Image (cartoon, rainbow, N blue to C red; front, side, top):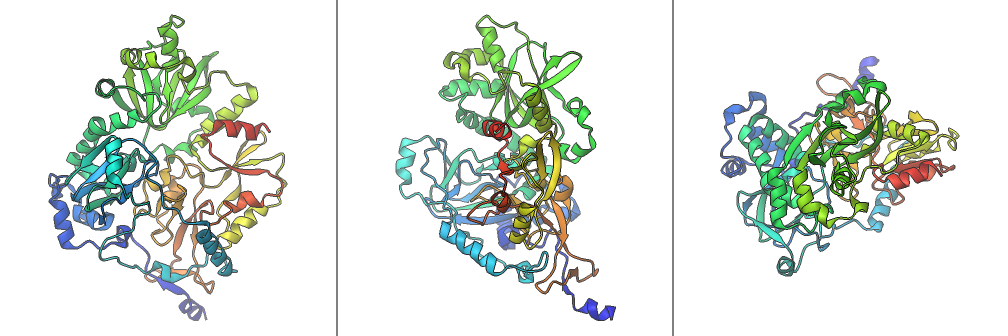
Amino acid sequence: MAGEALTSYSKIPRPTRWDRAFGNAEMSDDDIALIMQQPFFDQIGEATFPAQMLLEDILRHDSRIVRYAQGDVIIRHGDYGNSLFAVIEGSVRVLLENSGDVRRRRPGQGRRWARAFGSLLQSRSRVENRDLTRYEIQTNRDGARRSTYTKIRDLDSIVAKSKTVELGQGEIFGEIAALTRQARSADVVADTDVSVLEIRWQGIRDIRRFAKPVRDQLNNRYRELTLANTLAREPLFSGLSEEALAAITQQSLIETYGEEDWYLRLQKVELSNRLGQEPPIVSVGHQLDDVIYVLSGFGRVTEPVEQGERTIGYVRAGEVHGLRELQDDHSGDGTGLRQTSLRAIGTVNVLRIPSSLVEQYILPGMSRNRSSTQLKARPGEDSQRRLDFIVDGRYMNGTATMLIDLTRCTGCDDCVRACASTHDNNPRFIRHGNSEADLMITNACMHCVDPVCLIGCPTGAISRIEETRTVAINDAACIGCQTCANSCPYSNIRMVEIRDESGQPVLDTDTNQPIIKATKCDLCFDTPGGPACERACPHDALVRMDMQDSVSLLKWIER
């Protein structure tokens, strides 16, 4: 009887790292040979790669050749990028000034309503049902893809009125956003009909690991080409001459603090000792001989109190530390010493700008009210506890954090039921989490600024959706390795056993063990009304909050 029941189960091969090529685009031997002739790769020795991860295998599965017509937008300023590009044939144009001419082609509301209505019609009565045909691999043999952005019809006029850079065969672009998981810093458009090689994050990571020439080349490009352009777009450096920007980029130090795998140990470090685990970038009482500009990551700002330190704020990418103190010192009101400390939360990349350059180029053109992003007033007792709670838990990383006001929440679970009805009858969050007083941060994906869950994903199953910038899981590409669930420092990703459309468990053809997949909140990205949990709360007790918006956060907490 048990044998008969077993044979009725659906079975599929357990997915592996090398099952699905990037974009399902099939790379031929001729394609690989063409790639290896490009300047970016001809210096790499195959011998440096291990037998289980040859360079050819990485390129075949983690890269694709994409063809664009003149005027097609390849990458767009402000979008989050997971891939690096190299020009194979033709040329591209980097628009260094964000003119607003490049707009995303978004799906209309009609399309989103159609998807939502279709989902309603196909709602299932059992948990985690899957249409198993979604796991069949469809191969795209020509490698072409349709641009998700508007096509620029009058590129010549934009080039004439804007500052641009032309990149030809062998040139690379998009590498910094791919490596740092930050937003793209410029629009890039096809200047001619062009063929480009696109390598996703997983391939870049493995190539950098085993090929030192590539690693060195990317690091050098960042300082020589990318850093000055990045700074030129920031309000603090806007209006500076090319000479000033060149001096700052050449004479400043790029430094990294903290551990790259901090997220693996976050839950193991006691809250009372987390500040002690954060390495100091600058310390109170030291000479004020430079200003810290945060390139990526977060830093905790502290001041001395009694025998220890207390948190008074935090800085993030694009913000500075020490500038107001230097401004006070420059005007004669300071002491020449640092009044606060800055510590690395997780991994932080900073630019250490000499004070002499700041005084020469930056201070003369700025007013006091834009001198610093850190808190100007010390928090009260209640605000201090909330600030410690947010920083100690690293919750400022979230762009859509689920907050629950415990004074209004009745535990009716309408939010959970709404989520379940939208997602295969299995809610994508758990209505509990850490709390401070009446504020609870729920175990739901926060769609982080720096989503560490996608760092170790071997197949690229986790990525940002360009239309909404939410962090989502491609169920078909997920191999159930649990790397993301183990990496998430907030315990917001769960592994589930999937079932076929009849409700039977789906088993591995070789081992007869259940096939598991990663699941998490996707912010109901294909639902016109937004997150079902937030819409369903009858007591206005739940909100999805961008933790970078400190004004809205404080207003919601203290309403």
